[in-house]
Length: 154
Image 1 (cartoon, rainbow, N blue to C red):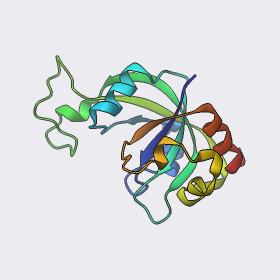
Image 2: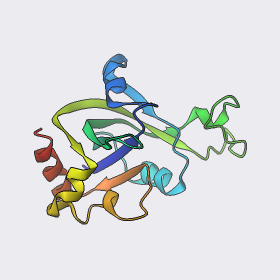
Image 3: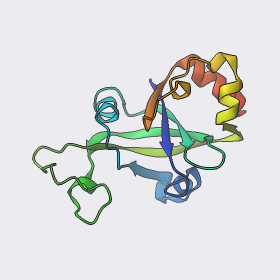
């Protein structure tokens, strides 16, 4: 099993939104970064767990845990001209962009803010904390996973 951190802007799609979906499941669409696409395609598997991270908001941080319930498949928004994720260069016979399905797994008792992550020496080398890292999905090491779960009182 692998561990991930998945970022979403809460005013676009929040952890609470995920919990309110039928079966608490939602496609993780709109990824338009080749490195992230490749991780989804090659490394992310059904059963993997991920942190749901709220980004670009007053208090960014981790709200809870999701489970990958469907492996990478073509993101249909790339073919929809009305979608903000439309890609005129992508063709149905050779889709450029992929998505996975995630399901709510668990709430944290305590929200784990970005400031808490930065302040914890055990997380100092965590990928999301590296300067210049702007990826929407990043892998999380097991030791970091365990520590963050402690901070969130899961």
